[in-house]
Length: 429
Picture 1 (cartoon, one colour):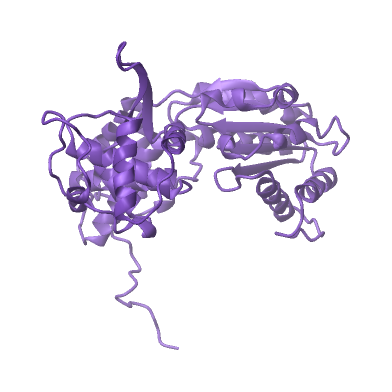
Picture 2 (cartoon, helix red, strand yellow):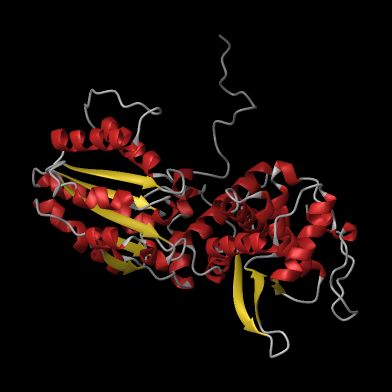
């Protein structure tokens, strides 16, 4: 076999990155790298800490915007609780479920059962398909009974689950004698009103405490970024890159996850282009890539009609004189687009529901406005990001690559003052 050492196709030394794992979203850093969350760590620990002494824990719901450290702190505290429990001769498990992926009760319980099997010597076969939710629960109860005194279950993005029955099952498991292990649940959501969606019985059974994580400020973001500086080779980060990255993230509601993602993407750009260092230009390019990726992720489960509605709104904003548009105006542009791409449009009410869903996801903002006695009240919709990013993200859908530029869309703007300028959106693809 030929010796591959020194093969120019595969560099043995990465000229940009040193410890790239520090920039991975799911990475839980050492305690001294966690910034500005001492109070939050203590608050979460106070709720689940009883588990380390062999006592029942409290369930807790953590709310806050994306990138405020909710997942990081939950996993950090759970891992420390597991270690502390072990010191007290208590077998404590930790389960983490990303509900944006395991978004049904069956998928979530399957992931939990398989994770518990992996952590233990459980010999029973757990099928990955073809069985019902109750069978996965049965495996969970059996493993907990045989191997654990307690378990902490982290349900990240819990609002993405199709129903909340899992909270009822977990919170009542010991009372129902399904297992003698104590179960502490940490639910995480960006949606402060998530509790209002819970069935009254489930809300009562879950009996949780609520914690709110506030966004990081610019100073904390700079410190977080500096604590990731050794992810890069010495001297690779040029002056001002950390500060710019933190400043851009501070504008986006103090999103540390976004700041780390931008820094990582900037490093990737520098490496791909053969640059010797990461400059401010790489940071600015990476911000655009990260924002388009974020929109694509948010809209990944959206219907084609929702994406066409976003495209219609983006085209209005890019080519028009305003930042906000009525549902009717968006619908008229949407119908024009549907005709050009040979797609049957849905009703205006149907499009309104699609826009409402995008507002829930945080892609747009909708505000009810009074138009006076002649017009009555109506909704105005605006994008929360650069419309050019929306255009690019929508066009990443392979079925929508051939969306028409604006000059092929009918002008539905009305008089000269409000008429859209002739701009070709293909320049943003």
